[in-house]
Figure 1 (spheres, rainbow, N blue to C red):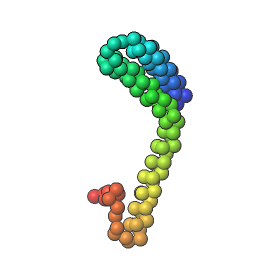
Figure 2: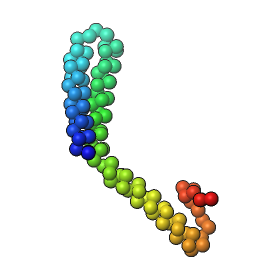
Figure 3: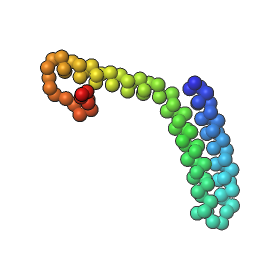
Figure 4: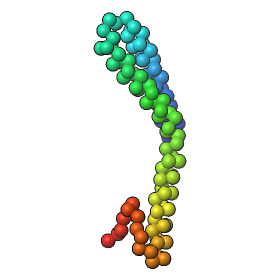
Length: 97
């Protein structure tokens, strides 16, 4: 699943990069640079975003797993606190009514 996603992101990043190069070359020949710089910036944002995603997507499963471990830890902490009779509750742990 992630291989297909990464392939699509890399392909879109390559396309964004090609269009950014084309627009940059056209940008050099325009007189009104303020108007035409926006297209260069938009293609550059797409290229950078796909680059960030290529580096970050492989870490998603580990991140989700560690969030699950943290939630499980908080549940276990709450159970131990209730069993030992401590009344101290943390704001992120809600009481079931």
